[in-house]
Length: 268
Image 1 (cartoon, rainbow, N blue to C red):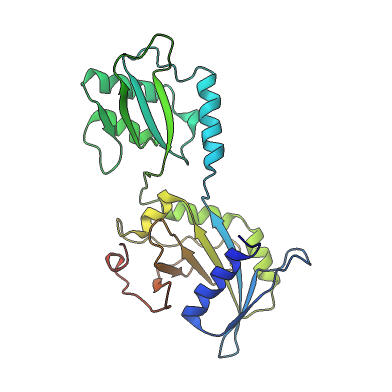
Image 2: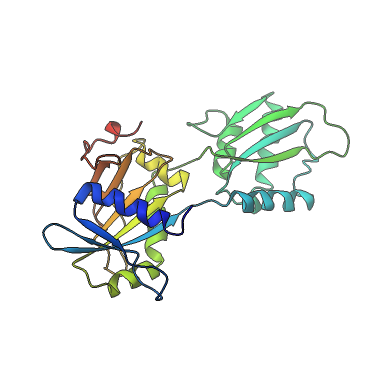
């Protein structure tokens, strides 16, 4: 991929909605320049900074799993069976014990072979896993050899989102005020933030599961609009919202056409 692929993709997506022309402003020749300058047909200039949130580092997640397994934290000495446990890459491995082993003890006592924490778990071990941020557990080997760990950890793209996942992600983004610093320094009439949202739990809030939340305020009062592209929710939709409001708008990525405000019209 090219050095500016993310910025160019963002510029083209915004252009399809608002028209006008754009230029790459941050070429790397000078420090702390805003990424894009977008000139609209009505002579207004919009500065756009491109950022991302939740680009889960799968390699780091796997490293944490391996490290703690090697420390002996997941031997599962109290368990009879061996379990394969799937974790979203956003789950902190350090927070799992002793709750994970306790949930698997309950699963064994109830004779369960599969425990899911996704889609409103009804059984007690499922609820216990959900509280830990675990996606699922499957009985892998009913009679594991002596000395083998009883808990095997694996990464998963399943997510456990809540009504707060999306606004919490936006708060994290807005707290990184280096974006606002670049936007504030730009010679522009409006200042927009373009967010590539790779946090699957937060993106679930854009799939029509819950009513769209009020966007948190920008603590610096710089950003006029936030554009959100969340491919896990839908690669066909671009979202826009004004900080501090619930004024959400939705556009087709391919054409820029405005979509119905109902989340069910774009959550496919």
